[in-house]
Length: 139
Image (cartoon, rainbow, N blue to C red):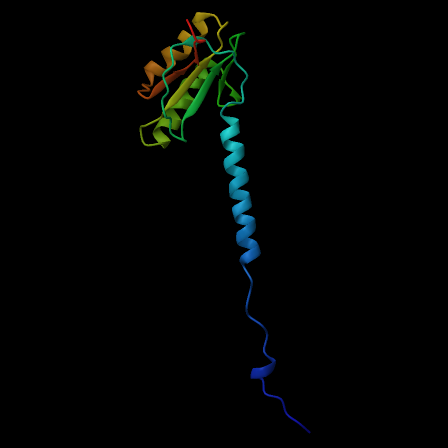
């Protein structure tokens, strides 16, 4: 009768993690693509202005005011009274620095944009950009 060594018949302890890493990279790319697409989610017709580009951080929040006066924080609808508390909480969570882009439709009543600007002034938000589109050539 022949005896076998326990060492030669042990379980294989190697795990191939290459497919897991590939999956992680794919999920990361999908996450990056979808989050950058969400920033421009609310359809607005921006007012015209002279060209001036500003680089914004990736943590920038967007407040959009539609033609009918509806206000959105990123893509979530929000009421003006709620907006102040939400922005205060976000500013505190981000260590006191909260960059904001304000996007107002070209046909919105001025009072809706002023209401948002009042909220931003009370918080206070120092890093504010107002989104516009460039004037057509020759104007």
